[in-house]
Image (cartoon, rainbow over all chains, first blue to last red; front, side, top):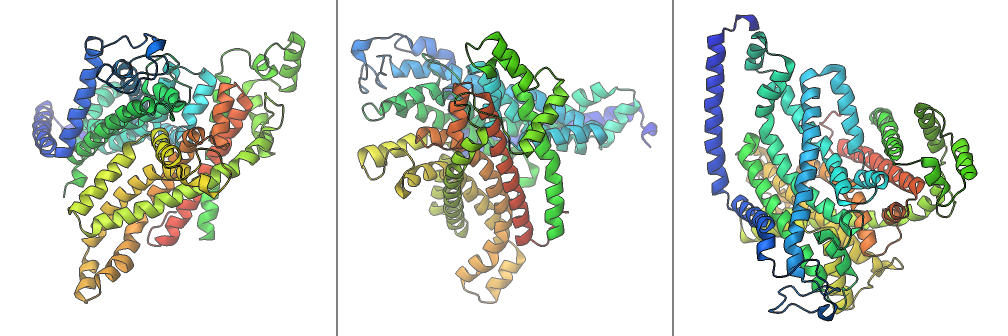
Length: 300
Length: 306
């Protein structure tokens, strides 16, 4: 059946798909802009990204500058968020820390997405024993509760922000792989894939050029949700002293040192935690909106 | 039902082997000479060689794995590098504490989550619904280690109603369990709400109402029962992140559970302890998942999980 498909027909099919893609983008944009919660999420994320960029310009003090005579000053006009136990300005540390905390989140999700998507595409496309092996591997990775797999990896690699990025990234692999595998299995059955194959495209081209763009929407939704969890996990690991090390202004590490001063200077723990919470809230709001906009099954 | 349980038990065998393999392989990734690490700092070359010989570290990796698995199944998880005591003894001391914390937390997750979800679903899009869902979204977004510190500051430092840390009495349980349970409760609440809204829209609920049944009877007897089915799966999944979350919460509240044991062991590079702790926690999770599957099947006989 597939061999009867002509080049002209394939072109037509491709064009039709492009049109539907454009229509989908329009409907996606209108759903997103109408969804107030998703817009609020996008604005929060935007502000944080801006903060990462302009930290060196707007930070009032050097985030590492120790000034023991100013230690543990409560929030004031001079130090909006107060100073820590070494007299460093908390606001400046938070501004600089955004680069670390958000950066680790993005890097680990990209790491997990890269391997997860590749595994999912390969398992879904080839099926059979390749799928069985990959799927069992994913089952095993999912059998580790919460951040325990990340902890095991850090115990081997040693503490540090880069190792935390890898550990949290590994923890995301099975989640991406599962979603991509399912979508790939659906897409590979579609007519146009048959047509492209008949035209002589090899597996690599089919998988990465023709299937991958069509499984992107669940990946984007998952990515946005994972960013929230990844930022939380990475901050949690730094809080445990396994990620960023002092004097790093990473938010989890700041929170950890703030814990020792909970009685005398609660603001030391208050602000870094608040920053993490608002950012995660932003990603959750945005992710919820994305899911509604991109998942046709949820449309009522 | 028994057949189903037997089948699921058989199915988890490869997962258990997989978990032991991953834990084993991760420890193979440790940079440096494992014998030197296990022998401890400042050990003589002779001692290191003795360790290598005793632990079979000069044998092929596959053989090492086989002997590791056979030891694990005999309850031998190795000895701690710190105090040279069997790892299993320490785990058996710590596990009950973590399980107790997990039990109370999951109780909070279920009770709070279901209540909030039902309250929301009964009057959808009302102010009550919106405010409950906003709180739920906040609950998902707050880092547990921060929430723990906030609760500690409020109830232990300011109001002085509850103890700051430790695990000595029932009052000690409240804050850690609340910290750990709230995030899950938020997820359960969202799931319960959407599941209830689905069910309330069904024909048989309209029929029940048309028959003149009282509203609370319709909600609790007809709607909730069916809405609970997907919620069970979510609770099961939550148990996993909850078990992982004990690591953070035990550290915040200085509770000597399994999670804190693992973190301390990572800090002191006590690898057998980390290996044992992660393995046991994962096996607990695998069996809890089995339990959830069985429960799911018991509640929903229509679904054939075989």
